[in-house]
Image (tube, rainbow, N blue to C red; front, side, top):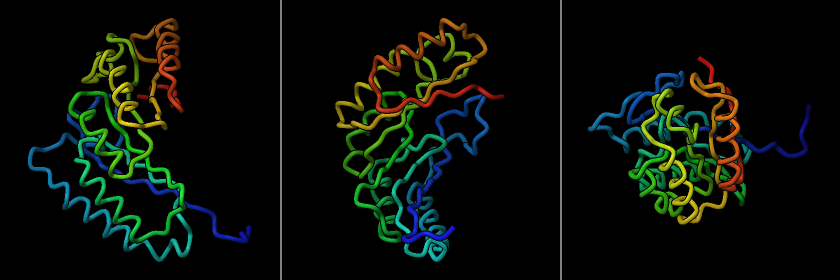
Length: 200
């Protein structure tokens, strides 16, 4: 198929570190070390992008998704430098959407304002469930209250585009608990909900 103008691109950036590896997770992720060199990893990502740039030609990127792992472990200034490096190498559409995955928790939520300043305009919060029992079964390190608070903090930081990740078919989850999760998520009025089945 021939295009009159090159179609836009989406760019996925993987930041593979977490505070703790969830037992169900099959993504390339690792427990964060205390001596993690954020700057060195960012430079390696940009070097990789530089090598692939000839394949892009003149196509513009319309979205950047920073996933993991737990990307919100990276400080806002590193996210800003990463985005600056991307935009210096690839043309972007004027309304570029930049998403960042985050987990509920006080440490990460404290950086929400910084991520907004860095250029992130969409936050994807890994709630997974609003049930303490289900979260414990998943090995998550946050509770239901922290999940709701994270949404409130994201809104206070100015995030209008907000995704909530939810899971169903959890080991201890009844149909009613699954419905309760969905109703709670909807009541928080996110702009998007990702609702997916736990797969072992």
